[in-house]
View 1 (cartoon, rainbow, N blue to C red):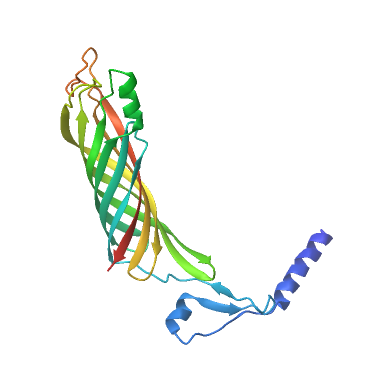
View 2 (view 1 turned 135 degrees about the vertical axis):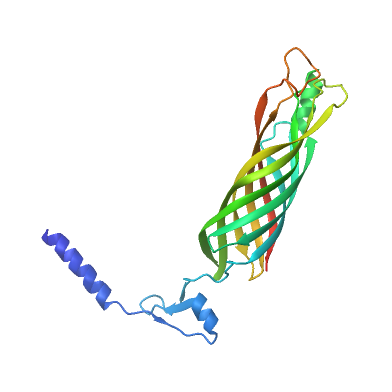
Amino acid sequence: MLFRGLVALFAVLTLYSAPRAYAIPSEDPSVDSERDEYDFSWLDPDKKIYVVQNRKFTKAQHVEIATSYGIGMGETYRSQRQWSVRGTFYLSEHWGISGFFFNNYNSENDTMAQLKNVSSAVPAVRDTNQYFGGSIMWLPFYGKINIFNQIFYIDWHFEAGLGSASTEIDLNQRANGSPNIETATFGAWHWGSGWKFFINRHWGARLDFLSTNYKAPNGLRAGNATGHVDGSEDNTYDNYYLTLGIAYTF
């Protein structure tokens, strides 16, 4: 007990006797409000510590447009490239509503090519060609990173919503057969997360992850190699995308 009391007393005396930190005023008041520079004389006098407290870039009640390009992940028999556009209105610093559209460029990958070389039967693959969606966005984190004494500001968001997926499926299941394409649109849901790196008040870079999900017939009917949508079972199709883009806030 005596030892704990001495430690507590020592801590109080140390804090009380430590030199106080005083802010160095800036000629630009707006800079002082966003980045306070302190001189801690009890540290190395050649070093300065920057304390960032307030948001430098605000977005509440502003509109943002963005465009991105990236890849699809998790498709066994397809390579995917994606281009997307997005518009967002920020209700506050922590909440927003967003609408987006993306177009996929789908092509057979090496796995499908190898399968055709060793088998006369191939799976019926459903591709997502386009997607329209709307999201509720939650932005709980606003980060700042100091790299080489330069402050970089980051927003981290999460989103979830509903959409519409335009798809096509090749019902031909023979390696040397002619394509038998059937198109259809399905209701979908999606979720995702991403970072926005502020370049300045208007411009920013985006890194986004998005998952889209919908149920659709898999085109498989037992005993028939040509495939049929009617009477086939429904599968849940999960698609994952990683994109990099640029954004402009009005």
